Length: 554
Ligand SMILES: *[C@@H]1O[C@H](CO)[C@@H](O)[C@H](O)[C@H]1NC(C)=O
Ligand SMILES: *[C@@H]1O[C@H](CO)[C@@H](O)[C@H](O)[C@H]1NC(C)=O
Ligand SMILES: *[C@@H]1O[C@H](CO)[C@@H](O)[C@H](O)[C@H]1NC(C)=O
Ligand SMILES: *[C@@H]1O[C@H](CO)[C@@H](O)[C@H](O)[C@H]1NC(C)=O
Ligand SMILES: *[C@@H]1O[C@H](CO)[C@@H](O)[C@H](O)[C@H]1NC(C)=O
Ligand SMILES: *[C@@H]1O[C@H](CO)[C@@H](O)[C@H](O)[C@H]1NC(C)=O
Ligand SMILES: *[C@@H]1O[C@H](CO)[C@@H](O)[C@H](O)[C@H]1NC(C)=O
Ligand SMILES: *[C@@H]1O[C@H](CO)[C@@H](O)[C@H](O)[C@H]1NC(C)=O
Ligand SMILES: *[C@@H]1O[C@H](CO)[C@@H](O)[C@H](O)[C@H]1NC(C)=O
Ligand SMILES: *[C@@H]1O[C@H](CO)[C@@H](O)[C@H](O)[C@H]1NC(C)=O
Ligand SMILES: *[C@@H]1O[C@H](CO)[C@@H](O)[C@H](O)[C@H]1NC(C)=O
Ligand SMILES: *[C@@H]1O[C@H](CO)[C@@H](O)[C@H](O)[C@H]1NC(C)=O
Figure: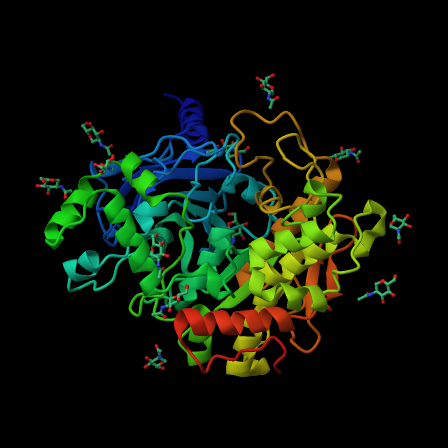
């Protein structure tokens, strides 16, 4: 062979190995083969833990791949869930998989920050691989990131619904090493984070610079993890997008008696009641998934404050100094989470009261009507700020998001002082005008609408095929700007500099909107009603009479 031919041969070999679908990477677990795209290598379907029904996950972080190597080129199954609008590919009870999207960087690049996504779906639905086109596609986020700031994006699955949520005396007594039950979704998330801590360096990631981001139930989860046992040192930043039910309100959690009572009713509905504890457990573990879903019903899967793994409701953990105080937190929500004026444009006073009664409870209605001046609200769509639907929208935003963010942040301030909290707490509101046909209410920035912009991917919860729609340049630029803030948060623990940190005395949020440059805005609403509701609710649910974190401290 001539030198020239040899050179060509080598060159061809190099090109072939860098453009082929299969790029082998030597890791502690064996050689892994990924899926190469223009901007990334995707390692899909890595199993991080094994499931035994209603037991903590069994970590696989230190296991060798079964055959010494692994083809990480397709997603693992999703966790079992009842059918819904969402497009969910294959399901299996063994569902604890994660996916790594690694940017193509110079081989001498230093270790990259790691950004871990926790999907939403009420802890009952959803999957890291849901929707076509893929909704949580880290490659697009990588492609539209600032070029000098590469980050690794990871998405994970975790157990859902009844399989995440049985709290039974029999389970608590089953294993003396784990005298707890329930909260399996949180245990799975921690297991994934332990896998990342142990292995991500092999993929070029910095195991000491892990940030979490999540939406809805995922947004609740990223805040909760700061209050559970065993989460210290696994991550240092959390972005909570529209955390629901909100991390700052008691009603997003169950206490032990609520959890026991409901789980026992599930056992009864499965016809598994017995005085012999082994019989109960083998009966429920032998029940089919379909029977389990039926017996569990349409219940919201809430975290359980259990005196052991999740010992304190997060605001109380903050107060007691047991919340992870080293974290940076970024919290916020969308402008029309609940697009009430689009659904009920002619809402009148009576409609308003009945909707508020449903969502807040009869007991508080007189106080709310009075405080928010609903009596005079107008059903005329031109009335603007005095429209009934608009007043109700703002009340529900206070209740579900803003007043809770304020309460949590002010609680941290009260505990650790402003100096400590500088550069650690950030608040946003997001507006967007989703245009594409996959979006249900065109142009309305409702719950979950921001996800497309955060991931740089036009995809919907339930899209099942290609989306024949592209963003105009303005939407792409808007998305890129959001990605730039999010990636900066993953890299440095804080957003770009024009986004100021939270200050309780001025209460400014950062307004992320396509209409203008992003800028801080003053938040001028009053939380006194919801602070009072919260205080009573916490006393009733968690029995702590000394609880009094008001929204107006500092
Ligand atoms: C391991 O190898 C066996 C036999 O070749 C094959 O059937 C199996 O699918 C492989 N397992 C994995 C996880 O690749
Ligand atoms: C990394 O490698 C590239 C290309 O070889 C080189 O230009 C760059 O200076 C290197 N960077 C460092 C930090 O060594
Ligand atoms: C993610 O998006 C990129 C770019 O559009 C595409 O090449 C890749 O196949 C997508 N990944 C998956 C797993 O769908
Ligand atoms: C216990 O559960 C039953 C059945 O779900 C329900 O009717 C009852 O109100 C619950 N009791 C308490 C105290 O939660
Ligand atoms: C439990 O027993 C009742 C009454 O015998 C029966 O109707 C029901 O189908 C059983 N449920 C399950 C999950 O087996
Ligand atoms: C299912 O039931 C059988 C017999 O009742 C029992 O031996 C077995 O352990 C049960 N399986 C599980 C997973 O509990
Ligand atoms: C509060 O924190 C202390 C340690 O700082 C701990 O001993 C105590 O158990 C905590 N209180 C509760 C109710 O968990
Ligand atoms: C309601 O409207 C009437 C007449 O427009 C006005 O006099 C009254 O002050 C208003 N009440 C409240 C609570 O805004
Ligand atoms: C409501 O807003 C529209 C459009 O901005 C404006 O034309 C109208 O005058 C406003 N109505 C009232 C009652 O302020
Ligand atoms: C998009 O176009 C493809 C190919 O023309 C078609 O199969 C698909 O149904 C279209 N999708 C939608 C949502 O219209
Ligand atoms: C949109 O951006 C592309 C690429 O940057 C550019 O070529 C095109 O002219 C832009 N279109 C408009 C309408 O600005
Ligand atoms: C649990 O919460 C319920 C309200 O949801 C309350 O009635 C009950 O007293 C609480 N149980 C305990 C032990 O605090």
